[in-house]
Image: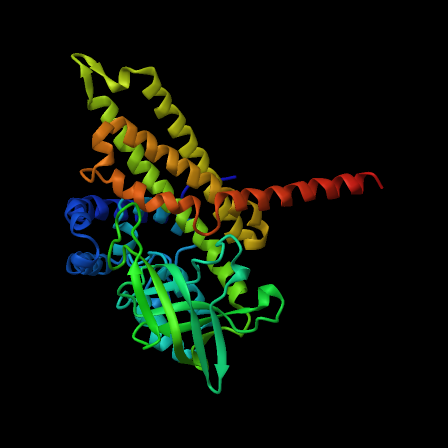
Amino acid sequence: MDFSIPQATTELLERIRGFLRDRVLPRETAILARGFADSEDDLQKLRAEVKEAGLWGPQLPRELGGLGLSLLDHGLVSEVLGYSPLGHYVFGCQAPDAGNVEILEKYGTPAQKEAYLHPLAAGEIRSCFSMTEPEVAGSNPTLLACAARRDGDDYVIDGRKWFTSSADGAAFAVVMAITDPDAERHRRATMILVPTDNPGFRLVRNIPIFGHAGGGYDSHAEIVYEGCRVPVSNRLGPEGAGFVIAQERLGPGRIHHCMRWLGICRRAFDMLCDRANRRELAPGERLADKQIVQAWVAECRAKIEAARLLTLSTAWTIDHRGFSAAREEVSLIKFYVAEVLGEVLDRAIQAHGALGITDDTVLSFFYTRERGARIYDGPDEVHKMVVAKRILKGYARRAEEAGR
């Protein structure tokens, strides 16, 4: 397998690193201290600079104003952008908008694309994805209770959602709702586009995460849909296709997430090593001289490299052989990279001592926002169980065939 990166991609990555170094990182501390909602003017200025530099929307098709990168190339870009909490947002490839662009591009009607896709791709509006429910195990979304009943040419949506990320300030939500409770369990749900100014859409609260409720893009909302009436023309894709579309959205999304997590790992690892070299425990005695810290450095480096190669291999497989050929690998990277992320962040925080748990470094921001990596898009335990069953089934089938 050829692990070399094409020259054009290498040059693009260097341009993005330079922009982050020169334009984003100097503003990072101030923006994070104020929060995304109160820093919107600064963030929009940075976005305008990204567009002027011709770097906007690495994942977007060229016809939507993006760079039209392959999944593998965008994965490499996502790793670079993950170095800063502002990276993906400033470059227009942040979740959940990136995933919503993908499904709108594939399943949206011309009217939906005009109203939602084009302004979303241009960064003129934000969106949210409203699926998770407080009373239903997120590991089994077939149990969703939020319902959309047909009333003439409308759907009327009733239900409660939470962890609808970035709903605060979003222009519309992509809502997963049950439209046929009697259908086969994976054909019960439908995706429906709901403008957030709809009278039946109520944002109850931004849910505090480790004490931080956040605001604007950096938030996770609890939402009530109460007699929320939208036209049937707001349906995204066929009725009953909600789970199929959701799976299509999640596959590439996991590559993006994992590479972003690896970018965070790089930042935390850099901070770990810098701290170890600079921090003196006594005259002439540094953290870096302690064997336990040396072990942390070696183990973190090995795990980051292993996670990176596994993720890039998965992206390459999806690009060349399709998502179905990489189903096992997609589950493997989801839990493995999330675990590596948690370990590297924890080591970096530990090396910083009390400083590591304050907001004086970016580590606490990463830790409080990214601990959920082992939960959202399917808990680690579910991914391990699913992939293990699939692997064991393959071995059993081969054993049966060999015994014939």
